[in-house]
Image (cartoon, rainbow, N blue to C red; front, side):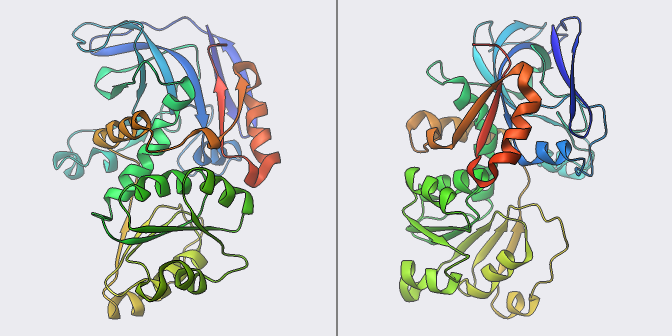
Length: 341
């Protein structure tokens, strides 16, 4: 069977390997679609601080169960599934309290451990999440990024009746905004890309603002009036957007940091102290976030179709990365079709 290996930044080779067999408690999956995310792009560019080469990528995906190992129940050949990519120790303090997604020894498949960029792939059955038969393989591969949004929204507590701002309308910002919009009283999403803001509107987010032309203070006044907003999600990972959230949010508000910061930001912590703001980080997801993501897709409460940019054949894996670079802000979610279906 074929396996794609990134041997160095910007270089992918295909090799033939023997199909794996599932051991006890494991499942053999026939991979269908793999989504490419921002972290994958960091690996492509050689800028991911915790990934070495060679590496088999692929962590957001859909698959069909090919075979189950001994002791596996609830999963059968032919079922559509996806899987959580975390490998955790189960013994550290975060794991013992149930926060395995921030395990002290956390590894992620596709980064510090082999991912699913191959025709057949084995993973732990306890990480596998069944999908409805009606799901397309693209929908199944988007459960992972949607779960990121679900988990981030949970970090802010209940949004019922609250005004919410999402800073950044990339794929994660868009999906997070759709999740938050299910509860929020009103929601505003900002970005410097008109294209991404148009996509957000197609996905049901009506209030948008181009932050390159309209300061956040003015956008907030226009959308929310004097009430302002009580919760914000920073999905860009730069100092300006974080500082803008701190300066404009209501006193006592919550800011969830979703974006990955490449540079250390200088923030006005005097505002944080004086206004009793809560700043909270978010990383990945738990099993309940995956199941909630499946539920949101199945019920039609999130719209994924406008975010699907292009699907590349498995043999053109490298072209998928180049397409993302060439398209810039007009590339949202790009997939690799491993199955040829």
